[in-house]
Image (tube, rainbow, N blue to C red):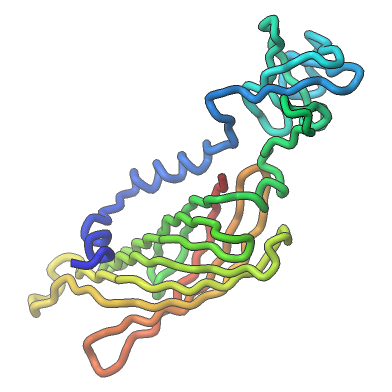
Amino acid sequence: MTVFSHVLSNFKTSSWAYLGILCLCWFAAPSFAQEYVQVQVKQAYVDMRSGPAGAYPVVYVAAKNEWLSVIKQRTSWFKVETEKGLQGWISQDDLHLTSSAAGEPVLLADGSFTSFANRQFEVGTMAGSFDGVPSVTVMADWVATENISLGINLTQAVGNFSENQVAMVNISHSAFPDWQLAPYVVFAAGKVRTKPRGSLVQSGDETRSANVLSAGVGLRYYLTQNFLVKLEYNSVLVKTNRDENEELAQWKLGFAVFF
């Protein structure tokens, strides 16, 4: 049994599974390691506020050369703690005017377009159509270089007469990685498993598997923070045992988060 056959045989996705993936993507946000980042104030002072916005009152003023521990982030604000245990929020702009223990300027990943260019992984979910049948796809990509990504995607399309489950590995290339709205091309190969629904005709129809190849084009748009929106169209070639192979069309639209 091939790896893809094993994946497909265990790909029993339910609506609850997709809901869990959506929640995972939605609540994913940038986070720091368990050890807090230490920064030193290099300007005359930094205002620490009671909440993550300029409208909150100042609760403490950190003086020049004072050390702060960065605890967590919310949008473009960072929660910090002084050596005496006082906590407050400072803006991203103020944080980037501090220095690290090595004396270098602090530029923490903040979910901005700059950090998008330095991402390593993308995880997302997309909805669309597979050969005219509503489908849902989950995907995970590893960003190998600024132009090339490698990944895997799993698609389930349930129609009136059959259910298709597709597992593919893919490679995508973007010629303009520094564009906020950028086109890309993608090539993929894998397996499709087709299972008849119900007892339509007792003609010996049963679950069958076939190899698939796919080529497509897409657009990805950096939305905000750690979120992307992706639109993709694929031409899918199904290698059947019959004289002619099947050519199917797939399109999908969804979002992803990056890390």
